[in-house]
Length: 233
Length: 295
Image (tube, rainbow over all chains, first blue to last red; front, side, top):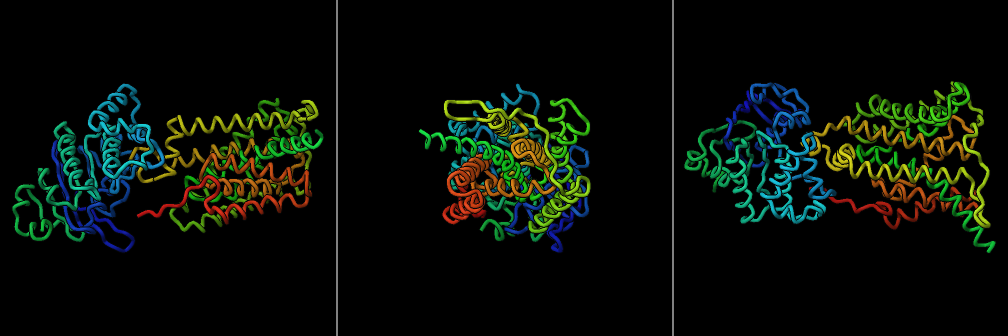
């Protein structure tokens, strides 16, 4: 479904992503794991068009997408839950969700998606008139996920959804990710919490300073001694 | 009774000029909200609105409705063009570069109109019959009445536009977080164009109303009302739309009361003095929030 081939990304002179290739098949949860600074977020930003690769190719459902501007990707079916949630803090929960459906014209579909998101996250429904900036971290994460679901994405990019959350909430968020995947959305997940990520993913890629150093089935990597030592503690 | 009547008269005059400042201040504050630029060329949009109206009425003798709509559309397009040509290429440069460019654009516009029309003030045609309406002891000019009515109406429309419509929500989203807005499928470039268009159209209306109130126009006429509107925007909290409206009215009323009770010469000093006092007590402006550090 998503194919990334030999991309190289630079921050000015710094070569941040070196010849990275990976793919995500339809229906999978694929995770990119690695230490802070390994380039995970940069890769997601490059896939969603917020950054441009200097070389290499990205294609989605056989269509080249590496030249497209970020705002066009949502219409193809790629939604992105960014690192740090980035909800619109001065707007209400409902307005945030409306913006998630910004590219949708079909009013009935928007209404249906609202019901779907509110059913998945009853707490968002209770707080729909509340300003997003006043929500707790976990609620903001739910809002960021719900906002992305409003566009009915085929592929959902998720950047560190567990960051800064209490362990019990982390478990809840990961259960939700599994549910979203079971309902038919393909997921590319970036995580520092490698244990959790590997426990729900089908396949995984391990990144180290901008390079893929290991790839395989998530189960195998969970049992891999090197991975355990480096990332699972 | 006389004392009260005089006070009310000055207050009404203040609301008159304040509503014009508020309209102009909206353009500064909207542009700042979305790209963090003080668009110093905005004052010259006022001047352009006045000259375009003059040309439409006096040179081309267009019917009044057309002669008032055309300048607004021309200013709206000029606003979009200025952003595309002068500011867009600098979007990722240091803010100071864009600010200096804005001053450059301002000089350019002033001197183009100076070359075309000369520096002598020309009389602005009479559009509204100035005969006053009497309300008891008060005399309210039709000009005041219509100016305040149009300004308040436009502010209400703007508020509805930004709160209720899709493009309005896109504007708020981009001003809060352009990156996240892009991830919602919002086209940031066209949203910025829309902001310049809206601000410039309001500036043009402000310019026309200003010229009706002070019917002599010259190529540098935008400088002073532009500066005062900018101060109004800062006073209310730059980037905050209700702040610009509040700031505009405060400026107008303070100016008018000073002219009426103290001295005309001191009016500008008092107005800018208020800014200094407010900013030293609340640096983010009257309605401004304290700036959060982003982690």
